[in-house]
Length: 273
Image (tube, rainbow, N blue to C red; front, side):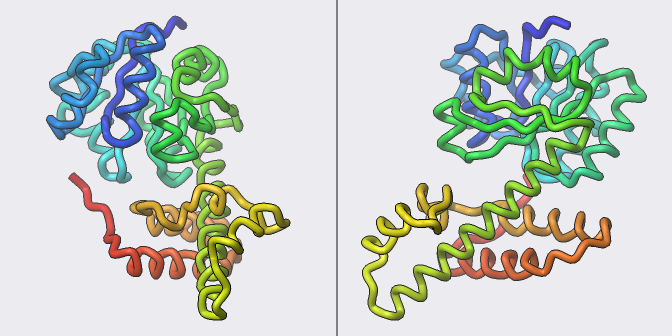
């Protein structure tokens, strides 16, 4: 299996930088996005444009799907003009979108009946890491196919882990999100407490970064970011826990704290395109 041409579907805050890194890494890159501005933003990197997901899939050895919602992943792959209507034989389909592990397995089962290999490759560390080519990639699926794609993945991710069978990458991302949003919630409430008791939060933050309370979210001030997918992420965790008959009471509280942070920051919910 030789990966030479890579397609990227979804050229937004994450997909756009991925396409750029792939192109600068020597791969032929084909991009597709519904927003013309997103397509134009990567044109100078040598990314060629497909006129549909099917067109992109017909030209690629590896297609990376990075859209935001489960329904968009579904439409991108199975819809009219979707990947499966145009994919050439041997295509590797890698889903970078954050979706429930069960949904990931369902997508793979349906796609693989058509003869395509499917991987899940959700990523961590956010937009700046995508720009810097410093992402963490959590992979699941056929190991041989995954390893064949590693040279492409290395153009935008400097930490790559194969976690196991299909869906394992999504489980890893789900656990990452649970811990991340928990840290953001604790940081936010802790600083609110300090502020109410008239302690300078900047000085306290510096002290805490030298303490046992230190965490990545505190280091990067994650509570000040835009947090568009927080509620979706926590809803996935809660749904999976329900299906596994596992009690995770912290998760419900974290979802509500994160929602409150977003409300205080004036942030709404993302919408499908």
